[in-house]
Length: 256
Image (cartoon, rainbow, N blue to C red):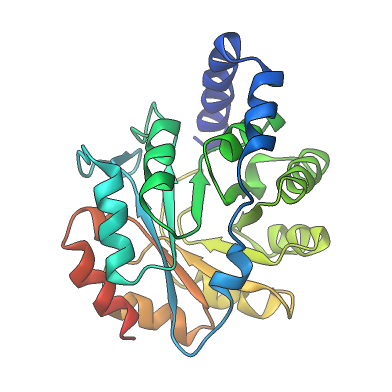
């Protein structure tokens, strides 16, 4: 499934490239105002921090919410106390788009993450051109050379890579990059099964200076507390926010 999602995301980016060439996107990316320093915003504090996600659907859960106005939802997240906004821009299985990211960027003052299946420099440039401050890199989808190339490009453009892992081996690969913002996704992107305890088993392998992000399996304040007790500095939450009251749920999560 991960290979399919990545291949499709790359194919869609190639289609966009036919009408918006590499040089044009690169120019737009370089003309953008400086990205927000997400490492400063998400640094460890006395309270857990939340990256709130805008997600219409997923392969594992199907349709979640229509989200006709992603900018309005992002403003609700900001009001509820989120530290950053994640925008799923994959269109085939998640119902997102770069237009969603652009709308969110224009609506909030928080750092914005492009969450997609990123595998090419063109996709990274698209992210910056659309106003992203962070870009997701999924270690399981990339070989070491590509991972390094994309990581370095994200940093060169002034953005922050959120490097997602699913195993001890992937965490070690991520540490070798010098990554400062590292996530552990409880969802296996091959089987889509959840393992909420994976983060806790891997927490000791994070580099000492890394910000620890727990991803997936966050449906309640108890889930946030579980991750916080295991050492998470940040939790990334999508489904619980798009299917419930976003402000109420955020405030409950942040009270942990």
